[in-house]
Length: 289
Ligand SMILES: Cc1cc2nc3c(=O)[nH]c(=O)nc-3n(C[C@H](O)[C@H](O)[C@H](O)COP(=O)(O)OP(=O)(O)OC[C@H]3O[C@@H](n4cnc5c(N)ncnc54)[C@H](O)[C@@H]3O)c2cc1C
Image (cartoon, rainbow, N blue to C red; front, top):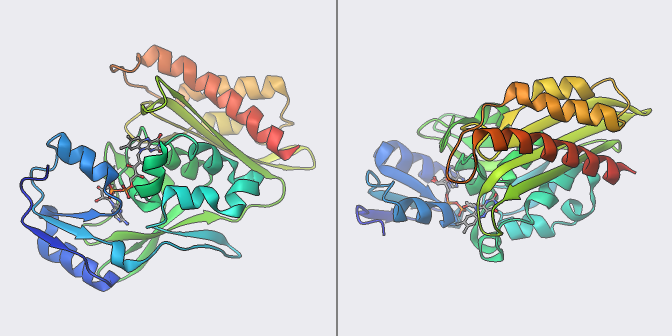
């Protein structure tokens, strides 16, 4: 379907990827699992692309638990992340486990974690969940490697803040303490559709009090997943009883400006964002108990 394609490269080092990005600029596109690239090409949205840079030979598909963070290679398949024992067992990684339930098995087998994040699609689920966990990406570029927090990574619909010669090598999820739990929920029209709204939350509780809260909404509430500092402020410093959760969930309204499209109206998205936030908070707390 990519009729404009002239050249295909499969480099085996990060340096060569950067060289190719530098050489071909806007005419080149990185190819990971190809599940999103295929959709863009089918919709004729890649008419400027003449060069594909396939990054499969770089490996980058290991998951390692470090002291500071869990390091997930950009080419890790969604299905392999789902099977990672800590994702299955840790309350803090609950949002990732929840988010990976939604993509069809065929997509979990080919789609990569790096591709999901780099696509910067506001309707994806893993990106919302990862942002709720305070994750960041490691980007390799022409001169250096740098870390970009997901809070700063999503720049707009299908736009990220990578420089033209940078690509993602790793996703870093900060290691969380024992009082930490997260959860994620998606509202969809059917099991194969993108999110109408999704919500990822993380809370940390010490001596019964919420010390850290992250609330992230996605799925058409804006052109990127967005944090809700107002909701987070309602949670921090509180004992998380039912009324605090309800107030925090209602507060997300202040931080989102949803779109209306064929999936749902802005008004419906706003109403559902509150419901999903409350239920995700309840789910995270359940995990802690
Ligand atoms: C039918 C269907 C259902 C889906 N359902 C869901 C769902 O329920 N929930 C959900 O979250 N997602 C869903 N997705 C999205 C899916 O998760 C993504 O398409 C997939 O993760 C993208 O990974 P990929 O390796 O295929 O990326 P590719 O298609 O290869 O690349 C995606 C984009 O990222 C760029 N890119 C890829 N890797 C890198 C890198 N390392 N550095 C820089 N740029 C890079 C590419 O150039 C491209 O622009 C669905 C997709 C389909 C087709």
